[in-house]
Image (cartoon, rainbow, N blue to C red; front, side):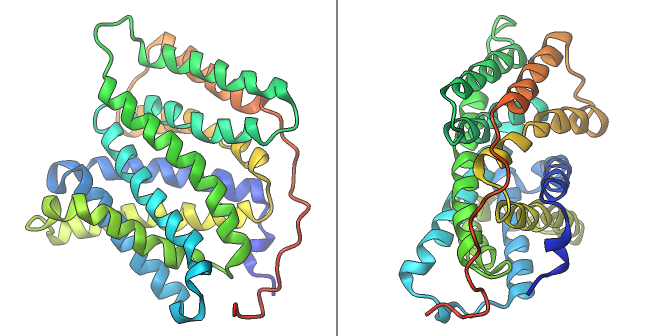
Length: 292
């Protein structure tokens, strides 16, 4: 049965998801002083998980452990990616972090393309990242760069696993399984920071951040990845560093230098140029039949 979201073009879902992600990141920064970086990740993922569970109302006993393996793995990756990303934007500008993080989906796009020439585009993106981080200007934040690189690896894995989960679970059932796992992962680092600081205002801001990220974008990405292959989706993500730079400048007043603008241009160009093979030719499984 076709849902209204299935009628929305896949590229439009992907772009809306990117806008929501970066706005959610900007809102999350406002929580760092109150509940810490890890506390913000835990709060956002926990509220997002509650939202998905209430929407999907999954009957977890319907699935075998083998069937649950992929969404559980997605939850572990999502939790780690969120922790690394938020820790990185606490140390470096949003646009720079997202440019580094974009190396993950860009690598997925290049590896899944059918041309060896596409492997040159991650190298161009890396050159852009060097311009963004400006290592010749004093001492670069190596910890921030490492955290952003970890988020990049997580983002690449997230794309691959989300597509796998989206093919095998109806609606947002897969996310209703993975998000609680992600919240548990974040809880090991975040509960100690957040407990005692959860005022009504913090909870309301946290709810807004959770709606912007993960509720809206991860739902949109799940549906987009059902209709796009990993190469096409990874290439669409080329817009994300530019969006992050714009949100950083407008919302967080993080004004980039000229060399950093050139760097963002290199990253975006690399993403656009990465070979795409278009929509996926696979047929979706019969989702009317419950898994056995």
